[in-house]
Amino acid sequence: MAGTDDAAPLLPGQINLAGSGSGHGGSAAGRGAGELAAPIAEPEERELEAALRPKNLDDFVGQERVRKQLSLVLAASKIRGRSADHVLMSGPPGLGKTTLAMIVAAEMNAPLRISSGPAIQHAGDLAAILSSLTEGEVLFLDEIHRMSRPAEEMLYMAMEDFRVDIIVGKGAGATAIPLELPSFTLVGATTRAGLLPGPLRDRFGFTGHLEFYSVGELELVLRRSAGMLDLKLTSAGFSEIAGRSRGTPRIANRLLRRVRDWALVHGVETIDARTASAALDMYEVDVRGLDRLDRSVLEALVNKFNGGPVGLSTLAIAVGEETETVETVAEPFLVREGLLGRTPRGRIALPAAWEHLGLKMPGNAVAAAMLPFDDELDP
Ligand SMILES: Nc1ncnc2c1ncn2[C@@H]1O[C@H](COP(=O)(O)OP(=O)(O)OP(=O)(O)O)[C@@H](O)[C@H]1O
Ligand SMILES: [Mg+2]
Image 1 (cartoon, helix red, strand yellow):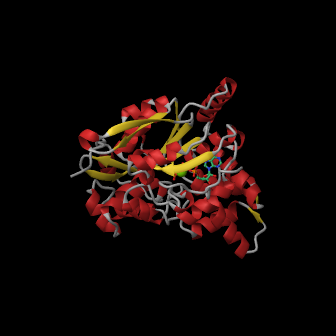
Image 2 (cartoon, protein in one colour; image 1 turned 180 degrees about the vertical axis):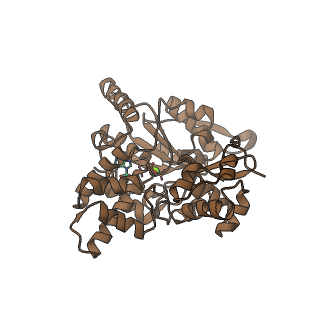
Image 3 (cartoon, rainbow, N blue to C red; image 1 turned 90 degrees about the vertical axis):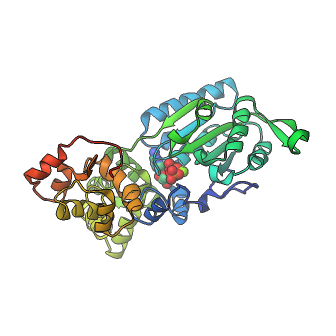
């Protein structure tokens, strides 16, 4: 469909999403992007992803609740013959926010304009985009939490009244020239909903919170992708890959591509669980989806510190990484999986971590694991 492709022509102030993969903030998160199990995509990968993106709601797997709610919002706006309410998509990287934004435009049969928070540093950048929208157009603002303050304030008015005030001149002589806008639908995406100011959040008619996918849902994502890539897998092959994908479709598709390479080189035609597992073992993504860094954090914790508690910076030195890398790249998944805990006295390996490494948890480590948890960073 015209205009819904990542490589759509750009306006001033726009960025090309296909070429802007890095923008999720910290440098440590950027470092994680090259790793096989990292949730963030490199720019080249974004192009591959565009080919696998579901184009309509029926093809979008999982996220039952968000899908039903969104489909209702879109159906109602079609009946009313108006552009849909503004929509906010929030959730961790790789779960389908951009995909859903494109689906909104496709389902509404409307053109899509793409830009992002970091590309809009001045109110003028936003004014240029808004003033060139056509009636009913869908404007997708990725990483909307990273927009500048003045632009954000301009957006409030645009969202609510479809109008902006363009300020001409400075100081006492400044005048505001009102500019009427066509009605449009804003689709915002953010990995950090908590950073959005209340007034902005309140102006969205619908907010979809994307959750991590179940293994069964990831199998469906993989089946769809395998069909598109012309790959043959057994059911067990699909579940082997899905189980290692950390609840994230982006990672599932990436692992599928690596398994495909392995099968190609080894002359395997139908990918079964053994092939998938041999390939992913080679790439050092284990049965729970832990990669090399995740495992070395757990191994250091268990082998060098008897399961902890140990301070974050000591742990980072023990694995030869920056503190920030351990904290932002490895820890979130280890904590989510119940493998690592944060206590007031430091990080500890939880029973599941010992079990995962095939080790027996000693009695004194059990005692440390019983300490109350605390979200505060350790000293
Ligand atoms: N529900 C789904 N069904 C099928 N494929 C999906 C689904 N969700 C995501 N994908 C696939 O996963 C990849 C990443 O999705 P997407 O780019 O929408 O993630 P995102 O939430 O925008 O991530 P980011 O925060 O990094 O921008 C895409 O290739 C898309 O095809
Ligand atoms: Mg995205």
